[in-house]
Image 1: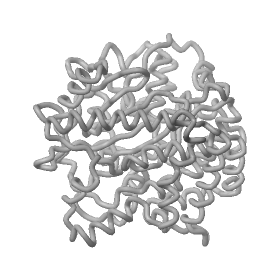
Image 2 (image 1 turned 90 degrees about the vertical axis):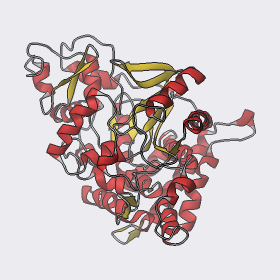
Image 3 (image 1 turned 180 degrees about the vertical axis):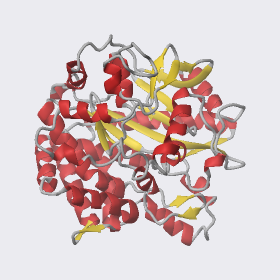
Amino acid sequence: MSIPQSGGGPIESRDQLAAYLEAGCKPRSDWRIGTEHEKFGYCTDTLRPLPYDGERSIKAMLEGLRFRYGWAPVFEGENIVGLEKEGANVSLEPGGQLELSGAPLETIHQTCDEVNTHLREVKDIADEIGAGFIGLGAAPVWTHGDMPMMPKGRYRLMTDYMGRVGTHGTQMMYRTCTVQVNLDFESEADMVRKLRVALALQPVATALFANSPFFEGRLNGHKSWRSRIWRDLDADRTGMLPWVFDDGMGFERWVDYALDVPMYFVYRDGRYIDALGQSFRDFLDGRLPALPGEVPTLSDWADHLTTIFPEARIKKFIEMRGADGGPWRRLCALPAFWVGLMYDQGALDAAWDLVKDWDAETREAWRVEAAVHGLQARVGGRAMQDLAREVVDIARGGLKARARPGLGGMVVDERHFLHALEDTIETGRAPADELLEAYHDDWGGDLTRIYKEFSY
């Protein structure tokens, strides 16, 4: 979940809303890669989730990272709820999932170095306090009652609201983890092309990164239960957004969509003010019941944009949101997948050619089938495994054309970061398939084994 936004004066006209998004346009030379990933923390002796406070806790993790590795603290009231350093931040999901939102970097080599450094720092502190961290798309054993709530006002408001608008909202908040990548666009037309490709091919990422076949100690019948959760969360702010593929799509159309998404809150003076279900359109007119007579600032608009959760979304960049959290190689593979597709024009055009004739029903069918069957999904007689192979081939070509070397020039480009996905396609086994095989064979149905064998 995002930290509160800051900066920007009062919004004086609706035009500023689209202008805010358009301000994200950058020349290709300034395009960057921002990778975010979440992981579950637990006590190594009890295998229970880490509480917020105490000797073995999320707070102890944050304080350890702060004092040993020079991260600056972020507080809400008296509680430390995050860290900042050199353009990156560490934040907390509602159930204590620890998230690194990486700095905007030029290459995937740098991204992987950042991931390595972060996981090493986390492990150092975790080992000292008797904690562990595991990368999965959904908590395999814990129930909702097992989960702590992090001391953030945003999450208290959201927890109440989620119970009113869908059936799986609190599951998403407290018991799922993701890895996602944030990418830039050059112009409105470039944004539209990238967003359409991102939405259409998000199910391919879901299948390749599927890593949540267990929930509440049982098989759940899905390769990605996390993806299943998002389908019954809040219809006003989730989904595949079929209107993005209509004529006239652009920044203004996104503004229209965002204005129709009910609000969660307004952040003022370190406090989250309840605006659940209220309208940003009313806010623009000074008629918000939560703050009568006030008009929003640009930071309020930025905050509101963080409460919209489709499979891909735009702010001042595009977020790819369809992948389960996972092991180290996957954390580097996801940005490689999307950068290969998005940051070379030939690859982007090839990806669009692949999906441009799909209708909304086809895109939604891939989304559903990917969650249930992963790489074994089929839609219209086509196999996901074959589709994924074609998409990864396009991404590989894009990374080759990008030609960004690493290790002082010893590695000619970024293609090797796709090896984990190439292995998955060759074998037809995503992480969920490996987990299921271990569960049925070596583990004999004992899910506690997952912590020892799949933790960082």
